[in-house]
Length: 267
Length: 338
Image (cartoon, rainbow over all chains, first blue to last red):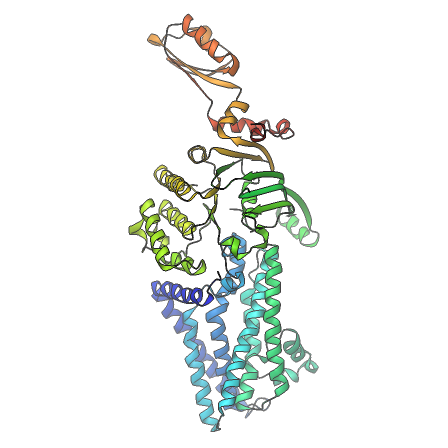
């Protein structure tokens, strides 16, 4: 007998939705704050391009596409994984991880997807709208191949962010009180929001190197956007796909080891 | 084969020693000092299928640690543990389908949702068939009398109602082993009784093996024939609950009630008086001479009523823990003797 993960996932979706419904005010406030944030970002872009015609080769329309992509990646991640990663240290500290560990199903799966944050999904159509609008402005035709590659790279981007955040979060088994998940997320999102090229020309490219090869958040958002509105770089595309697979694999290993160290806070 | 078999189980926790106050805290940031705590120290026992065994011991004795090792939450430092032929620390799904863990101080139900939604999640996680799920849920809600509360958010339930829901969640997948850690803690008498009743019925019907820790003697007395008494990580008694009294309580409690409320002075002055509450005197007598002494007193004084009882189990066990230093060396294992 095997656990049927599809059915479990559907139940997670349903239960999260029921929960969301009971807190209607919470839903509205969250969606409103997400939309407010988008408006601020749009104004920010306008401000930048009032000062310069391009940012290291990115025109205003291309930049808009990057922003739309970034919004897609981050809202998908926030909807499915951020809350769950954030909750892990709390589960460890209180010992409630006990009840995840006794279930006859993959522990990492249960930890990663139990709660869906629906308000975050509000930014998916907004992101898609921004991307579509910028494509119209650019007036360039995109092929079906480009669109599928774009979709694949979005998935890879989300996977990279997930693997990094989850690995960091599960380390709370050793650190017990570990509330750094939201900080790490803030850094990742803040850094990945801008065109990767701007980091190449700072500090001899050291920061760029670190953000591409060590803490690889820079390819997230940037690469999918590149494929659509700028150049297609096969090596970078191959690189991001490999990084996504390797990091997700590593997260499962770290999770396995961490859980064997679990001490379970007293009842 | 025994359902549960534990041999020479040891668990050592490495505990970080923090200095006192702020200075101490800052110092210990740089130089960590660790203390080794022996939570379980060479415990061995076996539990047969369908048995209900109680785990007794003061806080920090190692009861919960043992339960956690048995359910695969934490790894043993040393020793062998087998449950239904599985090694718990491997966390096989096949094993995890077969047991349930219920903890009185931690909740597994979704706080903001009606309990029934958590049950439906369990249905998917444990792959319970629709018909069986409906039947078991129906039976249990009936047994615990909580049918009307199924659709109320868990956070709006009383502690007792919530605990009943927790119990249902634990039993939904028809486990063959139940680990219960303080299942009735903080509950009122009615809720306690109802949970005990459910456990007893469930044990009779399904032959489920139950290992239970509790601070309430009532839980143990009404559910378990056999008890394991653990203290300081060591097993100090493994046998029938009644045997604890026989072997460890070397005395009986004799209560005398006097006619007309007149109590002889020499009696209330005796060294073995436990309580004087006119017209009643309670004495503590060695078991060997209790009967003789009782008849002697009966003949000599004008007594309206007399009772000879075993001392309360709580008291015997408390006494056992006080005397543990001498006792731990010679483990009392009545099971092996009988």
